[in-house]
Image (cartoon, rainbow, N blue to C red; front, top):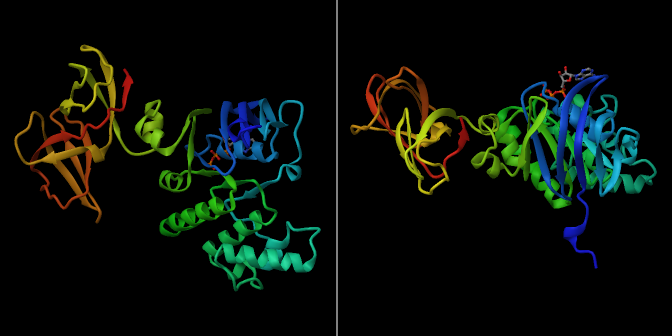
Length: 354
Ligand SMILES: Nc1ncnc2c1ncn2[C@@H]1O[C@H](COP(=O)(O)OP(=O)(O)OP(=O)(O)O)[C@@H](O)[C@H]1O
């Protein structure tokens, strides 16, 4: 008997390079997506996220490598299965609803071959799913951005794809609505057992929606893993910086658990395999730097403070003149111009060879 673990992944990219003409945009990309899994590709503008998505959808040819679906190659150098035979749904940034069709006809567009009763039932249940039951006769220009996005999602889900590709689907919406829709879309996809890859610039949105996250930068997939793996065990400073704010600090190992930095001595809870004398770069996040009122090994001057409601962000100047940021989530108030000590919360170090 074949166990589930032996099934091939829903989607597998092997050493994929894609681009335009001779120009390579991304090289040697490899990752797997299992059925029902939701992934995000995150990276700076122009790094090739859309290009990869288009290659998966079958709109762009490959320069090398392969894409397989359930163990069958659907794209390689010699073969491209046409997009309409891949069973992959696509949602674009600009929703791409047909302006001359009402909501019903937009959603029913992909349901060719069904009877009108079946179409009616399918559209009604999709509109219910995206929580817009009463708008089937409206036209796209009569809908808000959030409503248009839900209709675009319903249209992409209508043919029951096993995989949905979403290219910055929420980028035209304001921050609150974006987060809310990202969570709603996640729950719809999970309920329906549909896997998805979403392209975004927005790290918070990526964390909210994804089981797996890929960081694309400098034409390479820098890391592929769960959001927690990328946040706590980034493979390089670029990944660390992409999944949350932070800065690199030179550090000298004093023992297996202690390092000396410009912020003072930091004692980590667990040994992290560094030998005394070794030089490292530590990535430290503003949320891990805590100012205090008592005298400390290193004192910093409060240059600026910004009250953000949930947190307070301080700009602090170190004795070297370097400016760093500290973010705390308690109503602790330090005055601009005052001297504060520094405490680094040191659960686990994010350390790179320097
Ligand atoms: N049709 C095309 N022909 C030639 N070059 C293209 C084409 N489309 C995109 N490019 C180039 O490929 C690179 C990657 O573009 P792509 O749209 O994939 O990036 P992206 O990461 O999705 O960017 P953004 O986040 O800004 O949407 C860019 O340098 C872009 O100028």
